[in-house]
Image 1 (tube, helix red, strand yellow):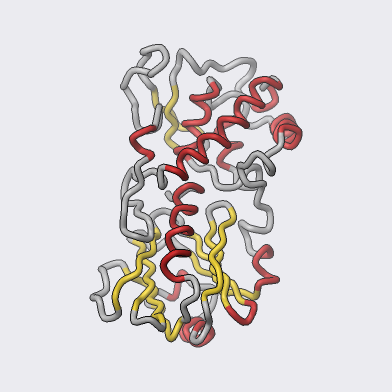
Image 2 (cartoon, rainbow, N blue to C red):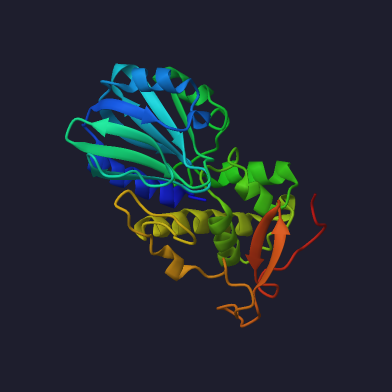
Amino acid sequence: MPELPEVETIRRGLTNLVQGTTIVSVDALYPKMLNMPAKEFENMLAGKEILQIDRRGKYLLIRLSDDYTLVSHLRMEGKYDVVPEGTENQKHTYVVFYLNDERELRYNDTRKFGKMNLVKDSQVYDLSGLNKIGPEPTEEDLTFDYLKKQLHKSHRKIKAFLLDQSNIAGIGNIYADETLWLSKIHPEQATNYLSDQEIETLRKNIIKEIQLAIKGHGTTVFTYKNAFGEEGSFQNHLHVYGKKGQPCERCGTPIEKIKVAQRGTSFCPYCQRVRGDLSE
């Protein structure tokens, strides 16, 4: 699933490729991913200019003329590409935006899990998922005081806490595992047992890892590609995710994999140890 670094990489690519173009017409080929009937969606987008492309957490916010925003959530395997007009559709192409420069912006999704909501600008943060989204994992937004308060009132397993987008925006399975390994925190550690030093270490590692992953254009584990059709490179710098049975880089202990919050979770049983009671 694309996480913040991958979505940010896509945002930057689309900004370079389609910002400033006008949508002449649209083919919506899979209505279930839309928040309105396909014909209404197509008619409302015709003639809209793509003014800017923003991001909030894992959501792309495609800002349009007439005070509209197309909110796009890629979910598991959604991706965008830009091709010359008339290029044959891929098997899993479900929305085609015909642009005024003889190109097409296409949304492809092998799982069909992606969602598109066309709303007025003022309604963006009323949408489910965005109405309670947490701060971005940046130095300015993710403060120590905020993180400590949220962790100590949570009493959850830290991995589940990190995956909850209402706590911190944009972190998914890959970067949760990576930042916990970097911080030497067990994924099942109860959040209210973390010390101030552990909280600050975790905060710094979250911010640093996300920025490094953005610089690496994201992580390609399965099918992720950016808007230029290129794979990310950060998978070459992962320490623990997807490395079950391989020796830990720090201590040589084989990496183990368990389920936490219904997600496969990789960790080092020696470097990352649980203190106190296990939370729910």
